[in-house]
Amino acid sequence: MIDFRYHLVSIIAVFLALAIGLAVGSTALSGKAVEFLNAQERRAVATNASLSKHNQALSNQIAADQAFAQAASKRLVGNLLTGEKVVLVVAPGADNAVTDGVTATLRQAGATVTGQVDLQPSFLATTATNETSLTQLAQTLAANAGLPAPVPSQSQVAGQQAVAQVLAAALVDSPGASALSAKESAGILTGLGQGGFVTAPAALPPASLAVLVAPGGQAPQTGSEVLVTVASQLKQASRATVMAGATESVGANSVISNENISADPVSTVDNADTVSGQIMVVQALRYSLSGKPPAAYGIASGNAPSPAPTPSASASPATTSGGHP
Image (cartoon, rainbow, N blue to C red; front, top):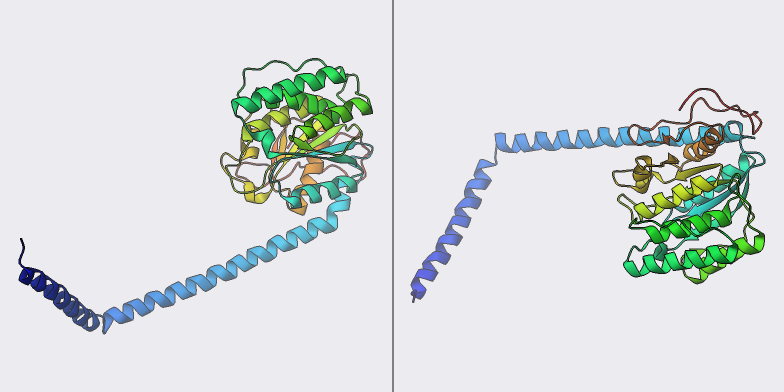
């Protein structure tokens, strides 16, 4: 056994070393060492002040840009979607600034917003049990509405794909397809609502265009594969579909970035929580109606800043804008 005296010597040695360290440190930090540290502190304070000033300038610039976009919004989107009907399909956790701003700008462009369908978190779950439940529900609702049975799929989100086919048919008048009656559409929405998969009005007039609002929050976001599937089904059913998201959500593996690299993409706008982004949503729909291919718009690296050239504010809904995004 180690004698207690050895412990005592060890403890005394530790305190002695601490005392010597403090004495040497206080002496060494005088003169040039102290001056060096003071100089470093002054540089850090000056750098911080400069960065704060630059940050404030950027914030002021953004605010001015958005104020300009707000003032010019009517001229930039006026009449672009006159006579069109648009439905909003909103993912769980979507930013209200996107949903509310896009809705207001669509109306400013002359469109009628037929309503809003909110997807519920249960719709995004990809468990085997949920996939089976969704597939069976989609088959039942399709049969009740007189729709063809959903196309079978080996996808990991086959249930959501089947439901998305039926949901798109209830919300959108597919070009060249027989429109569902109001009762048939209401039956689909009611069935999905009772299953806890969507929240929607009892009945929605059929739309011609669709906007899918992506989830908010930083990337990666939940349900990316599911929402890419929903976008594809809405695209197939509508004359034009755009996916819109908030600036905060920009990043690798976000829903929007995954949509941009999918096999059947729709146009996307990643800053639709801003006035300029909401204008882009309208212009992107107009571009799709004019036969332009899907493109990514917004602030992410590599995205087009807007669907330029901007369509004429006085153009009729049938006018085709020149140029490419």
